Amino acid sequence: MPLDARVWVYQSNRKLSTDEVSAIQKAGAAFIADWAAHGASLKASFDVLDNLFVVIAVDEKQATASGCSIDKSVRFIKELEQQFNLNFFDRLRVAYVDNNEIKTCHISTFEELAKSAKINGDTIVFNNMITTKAAFDSEWRVPAKNSWQSKYV
Image (cartoon, rainbow, N blue to C red; front, top):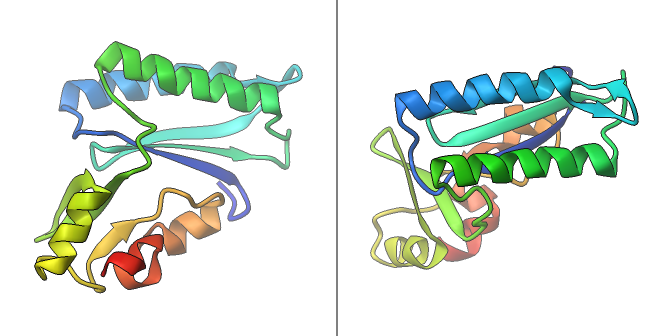
């Protein structure tokens, strides 16, 4: 995907098993193969990263993702939630790296971890609110001190 491609990151509420990742990747490939905006095929990609994140990207040079096509992608993610008993829309869950392992917790727990010095401003967190491939490459994994979670560390 080009650096200006539009990106959506969905973080699961739990780690996915190898079988779940495989099934979700297969479903994602089928989804993007048929994904269109006003009849125009979208040049898109889909991946599951770190058994935790679903990432969808679309190169809008070919066709722009419209409101209807974005709604379709959200419905697809909601279908995955139901099928695999997941939650991809809990924006109060923080993903962070602890001893080279990605962990997740509620923001209140993250705050407690910071107060007890188990994490700090240098702890790597994931900024799932990025919107472009360029931001994904440079701002998705960042030290907590450079993220929206900085007020907690």
